[in-house]
Amino acid sequence: MNDDLNLLLSNLNVLYRKLQNFHWYVKGKDFFVIHEKLEEYYDDVNKEIDEIAEHMLSRDFYVMATMKEYLETSQIKEAESKKICSKDLINIVIKDFETLVENFKKIKEEADNENAYTTSSLMDGYMLTYKKKLWMLNQMCCIEE
Image: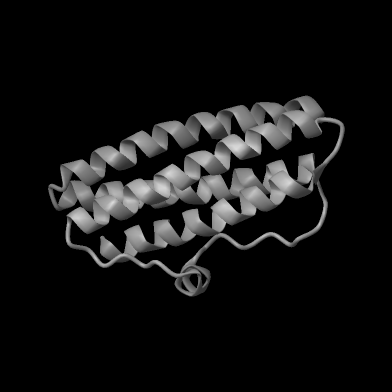
């Protein structure tokens, strides 16, 4: 489970920078709405990073803590430092959030098998949150089509 939690941490850390990058570089008629939402997302991710790392440390797990480690292991790829249309970035964020949901599911299954109920509960909360975010983002994509 330690490796999968570190993978999740890697994904969240790269996603944090990516969301902030998109926040700075988003363009389009819905700039103000997307710009604000991205800030909300990266603030949430920052809190999740801290919560997961502290949870891991409380279980005496090794916690990766360098960008080098995160970039070497993350399933989520960095964004380029260039302007991006809101529709394009929303599709990317949807895929990245889906990756996180898969991480949460895998960790929850492992935690349940090991009777690690606090870890399982933590993943339940994240799954609920990200499934709602995905539902909302997907509704936004439908409107633009």
